Image (cartoon, rainbow, N blue to C red; front, side):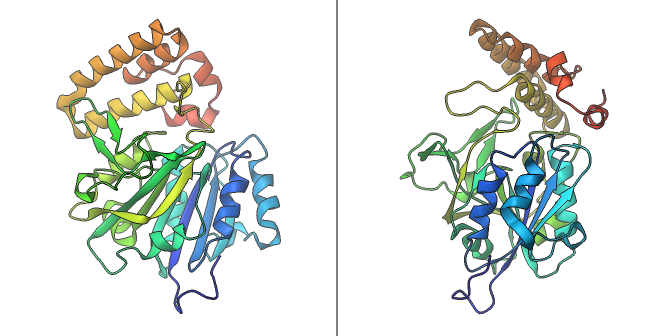
Length: 329
């Protein structure tokens, strides 16, 4: 994962991948990282108690080069079993804590297991504005894996009146110019670069969201550090393969609806309380739209999430005992 023809002193980039029932995608993600050039990768995979062949797929893909859990954070690829599904942020924090022990790592890459990075992308993300101490987060272009000519996100913005987040340049062709970095208010957690300065200033991610809005909350804690946009890296994303997030041409699952709207209400209460009323009306309107379209389970889950009720039976059944305790049920 470090080319011999690259710079004399290639950068060290820490990578955290949180998996949960990711057997169908993690192999492709890791093979792409193993082809990275001109960079030393420290990859820590945190498995949130997957019930499928995720762990076996990691071992098969990496082979004998897989590091022992005690070596997590060193150069190479390691697998750490969390034992419980504590949510996205809990897994990320577990990985970051291990990577932060290694001072040679200048930046941390939060990467979803359903993302595919071309060989040149990691080095570009590790070196872009490397000497600028004011950079806290780095966004870059993320495209749909099943429609790579369309942008999924170039960084995001927040509507404080409702808590709704918007993906900059979503669905636009890849020929579209990158956004002005000054417009970007957060970076998608699917593929996010955080500098060590940011991590030391903002601290770990808030774990009580469980899913969604963790990276939005995190970005608002950056203080004077700024968000930059790296134009030289593009990552493909299969978008919500494990938890049923909305994909191109689909409706998000009840599981996704519940946790996204639950997290949005929490985010508003924490950062923009005046937006709670607008957020409520937006959720009500969205629920009506889903109901009219015949997506009754999704509408029901959405409303229960926003109003802080227990998950619907089908969503609850998908949660482990530990996950239920994490969200208070």
